[in-house]
Length: 248
Image (cartoon, rainbow, N blue to C red; front, side):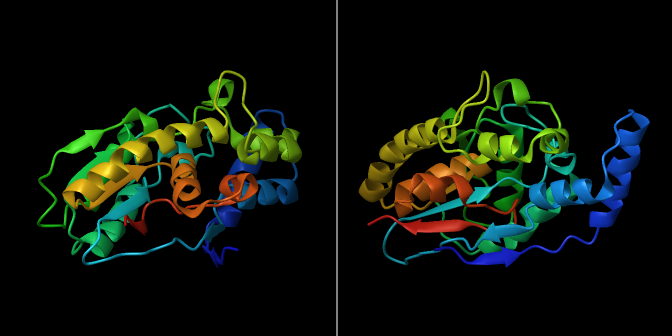
């Protein structure tokens, strides 16, 4: 049901060569072909077209993902870790800033994690009417906890078991040891939406939300009635663009 948009990656072979050498120095002999497939799988080569419904008369909810972090760059399970955004992440947030600079926004909400807060600061910096608003933080829209996987390499997990990694990352009910399932994240995001939607309707508020790939799955499930499979498999680009939902 979703259109896919390809994201070009001009540095794929550089990454393959880097990780090939790095793993070889660790005594791990992975083939370049397998590493190439792992990196392509993990690099957001394909993301879903983002839904945008906006109105001049009804409240609108704007939702976006944080810009690239060091963990994204290095293919590390991030979850509840708190890495900063990279220079590219800053550029992505400023690209987003140009897209929302003319939006009428009355409230800013971010997850409690640094990458989402910093992205919000940059993304709203060119919006004259909203750039000085307080950024409200809410832990219900933070990233999915990957538990024992946090801080570990996604590439190594792929090399050990592509199917196992897919199950952990994209199984709707799959729960990493000590972590959360996508289903659990969706439930806490739904509680957030149950609170903010009535406030938006009552006060005619347009709200911008800065959050994460998995919490965005929760927003999409809530507003688009996605199935378990669809929810687990929608992909959102880092920074750069936004989702918009009219609240009527």
